[in-house]
Amino acid sequence: MRVITSALALCAAIVMSTAAFAQVPANPNNPAEKVPEKLTYTPYGAPITLADAKKVAAAALAEATKRGWPMCIAVVQPSGDLVYFEKMDDCQYASITISQRKAQSAARFRRPTLVFERLIGNSQFNAYLPTLGDTFTGSRGGNPLVVNGHIIGAVGVSGGTGSQDDTISQAGAAALK
Image (cartoon, rainbow, N blue to C red):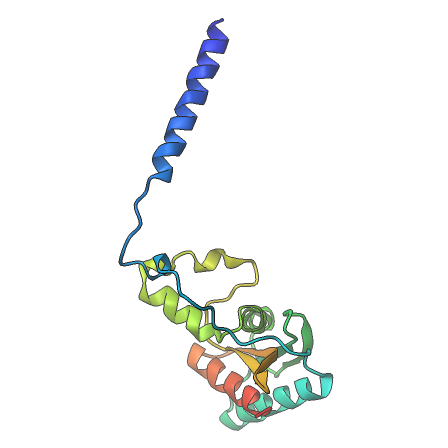
């Protein structure tokens, strides 16, 4: 009987504590509390071809070579799956994975990774962003590849500072415009 009474008391405590947590009031300063009337986004298109992926990588590689910045350059399709990859000599090994993650994030979330970097850095209300998945990267250098208003993939670059990575990534993305 004593065990049953203890178990019931424990269950009641758990139920009551759950109700207390559920009553956290909304913060009117949190932009996530506002519900927009319309969802705006760039739709996905057919996946990037290997020929176009090579064109993107070549443009990024040319810009990185011109500047003397050793980089890793990844091009993915809209799903985030790798289509083409280049690693320049002397690029740090960590950048192999980082460049691919930046490209995956830009493709899957349909926005430049710079957006996430700025959101994380500018507001306490965006602390949830790193919980978006194991391929999420909130660091500049990943940019969607948009052709005829549709995302056909993304390019991710790593190896330098964030601003260097983004400069090279944008050079790659510009190859399809």
